Amino acid sequence: MNKLKYISVTWLIILSSLLGVSSAFAKSYPPRTINMVAPAGAGGGWDITIRTVAKTLKDEGIINANLPVINRPGGGGAVNLAYMQSQKGKGDLISVYSPPILLTHLVGLTPYSYQDTTPIARLITDYAAFVVPKNSPYTSINQVMEALKEDPKSIKIGGTSAAGSMDHIQFLLVAKAAGVNNLKNIDYISFQDGGVVAQVLGGHIDLISTGLGDVAGLIQSGELRALAQTADKRVGEGMMAEIPTVREQGIDVVFENWRGLFGPKDMPEEAINYWRDALEKMIHTDSWKAALQRNGWDDAYLDFDDFQPFLENTNQQYNALIKEVF
Image (cartoon, rainbow, N blue to C red; front, side):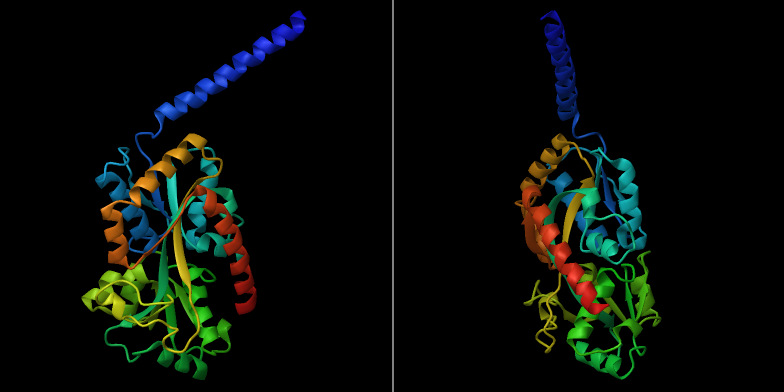
């Protein structure tokens, strides 16, 4: 009897200690600094998204912690994904990702996937855009496809994701639907340092495959001309709303570039709940709604509970697409 009493008391002490640690963590969260990571160079879609999130949260007074944005490019997001494995169980790193967190794993560029993170929320849907310099001889996506049908090496395509990842895959899907053969022979060049715009303006590549929101400012300034985007409808306002869909031009494809936030694997529950509450507040602010309109993003918010099943289903869909294209 005394032995059982001793065991019971011991477990009560252990339980109290654990509860004390959990309570202390909850009271101390958020930490003074939470690193907001874009797993690519400055100026791209991930960079714009994470900076917009950090700015909105700070400007609206939703989070008082410091939210510095860190660019950690490489491997279409794989370098940062590998780094996140060293941060398991922590709550002071939030990274933005999109389809490459699935694609880079499916094509064998990294052993890690979304399952090696804590998916927090899906925020927005952007769409693919295919842009050329203002003085380009190509004025429609169909002209590009016709040139590729004659010679798949005739046009150099640039993007900010790795070969086999999103910018590459989204262009190949459109090319396949347009009837282009020998997809493997199409020249795709990855510029993960953010220098893709300079490359196309300098005439080193012919076309950029990217996210619509990534190049909105350059389209509006007239430096780049958009040949097409991959939504099922016109999006945005002003010049953005003038960009035709590929479907309008007879190519039956819709491609959604969703973006969401991820923490390290085994992120503490207190941190998850804090971010769920913060993001729920953020998406209802006028600042966030204005950012959606400005960047041509669609509101596609999915909370923690719905994001995981979305990723599972989407991963299966992408896997089938990759097997078909390659």
